[in-house]
Length: 352
Image (cartoon, rainbow, N blue to C red):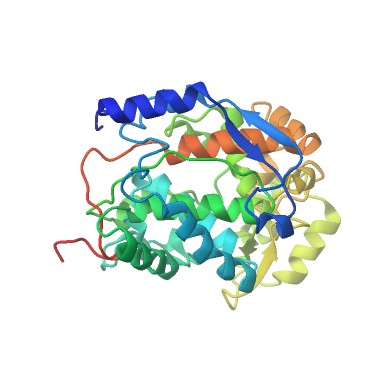
């Protein structure tokens, strides 16, 4: 890992002495980007910024070199979010799939036959071209300064805020990877059949606690799932035995949406929860009631290691927002590249 320079370390320390303001609002007010919000939640993240794996990142990384970076990203995304209500979920998934494989390094954006996008686990990933659009704008204002990896992280953060979720800061200064492997993606990314054990293993490898692991799954609060990812729960006897807590009415609805063991199309989808366009704690309320869409959703509501956090998040949205914010920062700050580059074009290395 890259050792922090004295300036980066100082910046992180200074920020950690303060507290990140995590603010909640309706999706409509979110377009004002947390200008007027109630209530105000103060989240201390000293333990995160001092934890291992975030060397080189700081909250004022672009203060001198590209101070308008967040404003440019935000203004570019607003019309995208307004015209495509499912776009925020797509940016969150892009962020997650980038960070899980080998850290938040924009390796998922590299186009080559053996890259991460060749992995079947990246089915349905979209909005990669919008990251490039923002990169092109930033290259005009701050050429060769802002990494594609930071743009992905910022886009995901803005997606949460726009959808009505918490508003929080993240440290910046990530480098872009020069390699991308579908084999690594196959090995690292979760499968739709993965349960709580594998999920906790994945997030633990990123330095995340059990509470943070359950909180980051709250990203399922927005977006949809494809039949391809859930039919095993409906038509595989072994898998159905694992899902004995599935609400009967919910199961009937899923069977109507996904009537075939082998889906005839990848286009059919089911909303992740009852408020799939709003980032809230409805996801946890649903899974407590047996309406979890994915295998892991059902299991975390029952597993003794995770059930108490699910219950707390279902009962207290502000507590969930606080935990999610900390989990997001933790994930976004793990496995920072010690070497890398600032790509001029996000889908290819500079030496291309």
